[in-house]
Length: 114
Length: 151
Image (cartoon, rainbow over all chains, first blue to last red; front, top):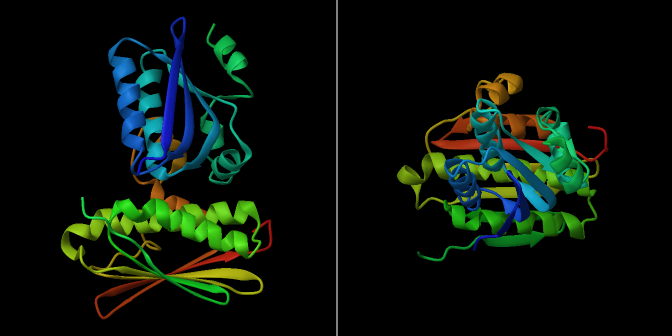
């Protein structure tokens, strides 16, 4: 059973993606495919709202890392908004948090691209 | 797809599981571990570290060995001691010593956009002790997490 809800909305040339549930071995492919499709359609600026993400496995982190590499080479990026305490603590203790640009809410993240 | 499930036994401060080598059970595995630790009133942050380390360990075993050893279950036992939690994992198969595997340089990993290879780093970073041995064609992995918050 897949435990990830992905909702995306467009704000100009920015794609705001809200993840709810678990980004893991089963669900990471759907997330990756969404990003690939949007990139193929020309999008380069992404915001991922992680407020309701309750779990992230290494495979999910891998999607962020590999996609960000592609986007940064083309003047884009995935930025993070509304990261909850659980996910923040994990990324922080692993030393990963410094590699993400994080904003406290969607509005600030959107502004950062403008 | 054939439905598979984890056989579970509970004893005092221990949960014992026999885990099929299938990604289908990973979500259930996480839930069993977190529910068990919740009943033992373990700190949320420590629970999240154990949850992730166990998930990554099981994922690695399943995804690298299922083809050859698909019918053999993974045995996992988590025991709560006074000051620490011990997780013992046994899996039949070729030897893989994750205590000796190369740890990625995280900065280079992010810069290069490398998608794989973080599981071992996560396990060894989140756990306070990681011990490995191999005998009778079986990998024995022991993970220890101290219960004091700043470990």
